[in-house]
Amino acid sequence: MGMKSCHSGFQNRISDLMFHHGHRLRAFLRRSTFSQPPPPTSECYLLLPHQKPFFPCPLSIVSHNLFSTTSDSSDKQSFTVSYFTNTCGFSPQAALKAAKRVRFDTAEKPDSVIAFFTNHGFSISQTHNIIRRVPELLLLDSTKRVLPKFQFIASKGFDIVTTVTRYPYFLLKSLENHIIPAFEFVRTFSPSDEKALACALFGSTSYTIALMKSKVQLLLDMGVPPSNIYILLRTRPSMLGCANMKEAVEEVKGLGFHPSKTHFVAALQAKSSIPKSLWDAKLDAFKTWGWSEDVVLDAFRRDPHIMLNSIKKVNAVMSFWVGHLGWDPSVLLAAPCLFGYSLEKRLMPRALVVQYLLSRGLMKKNASLSSPFMYTDKLFLRKFVECFEEEETSKLLSLYRGGC
Image (cartoon, rainbow, N blue to C red; front, side, top):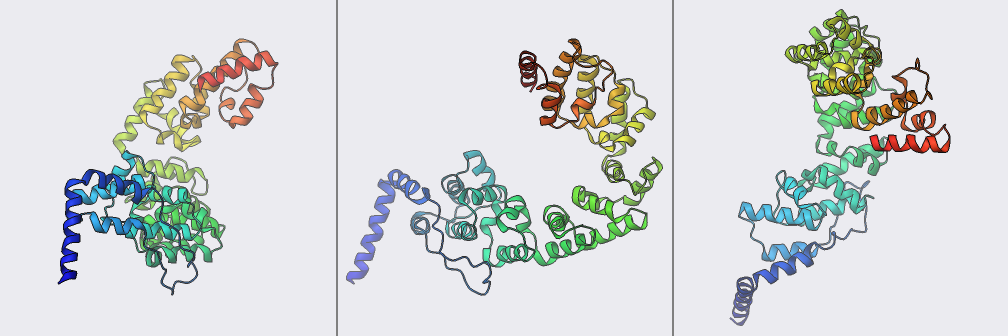
């Protein structure tokens, strides 16, 4: 009887605290619960899947289970947002965004996931960055869903922390149904395990192995060599979802692209991903600047990526090159890759330097106008800025940095 009375008194005391001192209590919980990340355990169980890992019970679990209400959806979202901001260091905006994808009402599961990553060599900042990109990981059973993928990566000789930090989304994929079959299939076209794994983790697992095989076999039957199949799997895996692949291949061949050439894959992507109405609209955009359709298709054969640029980007580059600089548009026809460069970060600052050099006679008038835009930043500075006298170099640097 006395124990029951004591228990009742304790419950009344808790209710009194919650009613009269709720604000102070919540402030105390915010300070005490989330100020530190969950303590890591001393064991790393990467190679011991048969052992059940032990996670010490963090203070946050006790606190929230004692005082939080979990039945209400808004309370659950509030708890999740608080966890993301106070434990994971998310900004309020990032926390709200993540809370739309996952919700939990206690810290037990997310604390265990964070401890799992830190036990396997991930720093706190690396773990938080992974969770920021893939918050769904906080709801997984790490031992059953994540550990086997760590073991698979390790079995291929790859560093777990580096690989997972770079490709965290694959942790949501099925190891048996997606990752392993995709790796084994891509490996038949890839020059190395490392490159095959990157393909399997980064893009190819978006499609079933059956679809991958059927589309790749179609391409092989139409004369596309294994080397181009690998380029497609590495850079254009979305093309595997193309419904009219056969028609697109025939059309690209008709435009003069040979399946053995590397440009064939980019041309295939352009023709298979751009609807005819948008393709025609892009042709019209070039025509407004005086280019005929034959001229545009000629540029497309030089570099198919030209048609993958938006109409807005095409007009911006043409307006700057022809309207602002007054330069010959045929240069863009000869080097259509220029449309793919950033207008603000590359074309504008380098154009200011080239204009200055031409005006001062420091660059031959018949020199290639396209070449300066194709060099790396380091080589451009060395060849067009730093090779002059100190006073001239200072002016050029000012122009270049101002343009940036």
